[in-house]
Length: 345
Image (cartoon, rainbow, N blue to C red; front, side, top):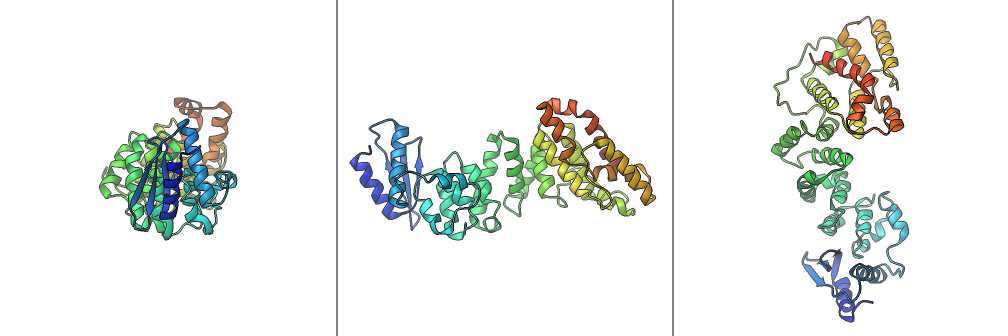
């Protein structure tokens, strides 16, 4: 099925390169040599281009892995489970299959030796952003020069990301250490005022170090039960959460925001509950036990018990989306928003 000329050139590429990628749109195969030079083969299909690409991949797999059946199906199942062994990581980067690159990027055995090859293989592929996110979950990648390259790409790719969970996850990952500049962080924070998914990434990753663009000041910190609330960073966090909740139109933004809120304000005497009225009763009871029955104490104790369990069953049962989430959950969200207003006044 492959032309003799393409077969010969592919075999030369296999023998001289440490990594190979295929551009299925331009119909080219690119190899990377040990000295980091690229060698490019322009394919000359004699049949349908997609079938020709499959034939190229089959040749690469058979020559590199010794498998005649194409990309091993078990690796496709394991790609996102981190269960690819260390012995064949380099080989998987020579078969021109992006699923194999995903497998390597998510492998528990990923190391400095193959990191730059993985990112090179991911370049200009549909899975580049996904692979970048996988890589930035590794501490050693964040400290490696490649980490900043990945961060620069993901930051540039953000405006083209529609999936809300990916927006949150990407923002969260970009905020690690000094992967992006303070100016870039500031821009993301400002964009979060319009697109709350960005803010969720901030409140998950940067608690204690959130931007203070509104000259937010600490409140009275003399009451132990309100110390985490009244600090400058506590006020910024609660104000950000209140802003997010006003604009809720996506379930995962709501789930993760409530998880952050409940976790930040967790209290040894408060249990997470799935009913807002039960949470109010619990907060009142605990406040009485503590002998601290101010509205701020009760608000703080109420919020200590929130989590995604408050809303997930309602959203799932009614398949809620968009503004319908706010409307259907008004009975649950109103007490939370009032408690936040009490604590930030």
